[in-house]
Length: 281
Image 1 (cartoon, rainbow, N blue to C red):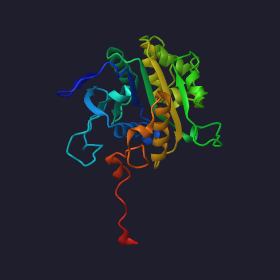
Image 2 (image 1 turned 135 degrees about the horizontal axis):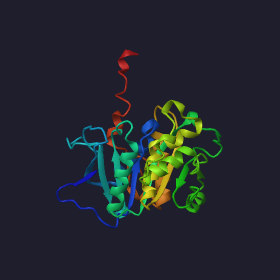
Image 3 (image 1 turned 180 degrees about the vertical axis):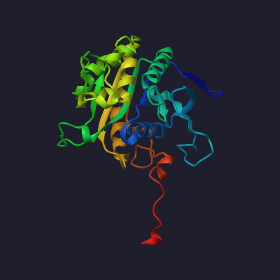
């Protein structure tokens, strides 16, 4: 993985927290990062080139008007006031290469002096075993702070540890083994059509990223929410707000225009296509 910095830009050492999405159902993590970049008015400082990320290109995602500045598959943004580096991923990883991509990303994070990595991702609502909507949409987390995935700060914020995270379970254990560079247990991993219900969570991109970043000795916090495919804008707000709580940021200090805090990205205007032609009704 190669980091290409834009001309005249520089990466600040004080931005030691890295926030990025892990691609999953509904693209909620990516939407949340879009919302944070737009609202913080974070500056794009460069992009990353990795052989395992599919190429893509698009128009400027944030506006306020489309200016023709190209958006690329892996872009790095920086908010010095928040001491935060944000990485946006716009295209998927080549099938079967997620662990290798995660290793590359972990090497980049460690080499660039990051101390804390925050992963934003979503989980399939259909896999939710214990549904409890009494307190609204629930945020789940997994942290590298303790071996069992628990974190006191996340608990104080009212979040629940993802119960399905079990480092002793076969696929979680196998991921950890791969992340540490040991491939001798490769035959122990079940084939895709042999995956059981408990194998769903470690098969997701956030799990590979979590395992590889953790193996590098970095503090890692995964923030997760359940959702379905469809209009996931509200899920993105929910996850972005959770990231702000975790990092001690105040969205009302972002000087947004929609609700006093958030700035809606330009690209969201057509994220679900143009509105219908009302003349047909």
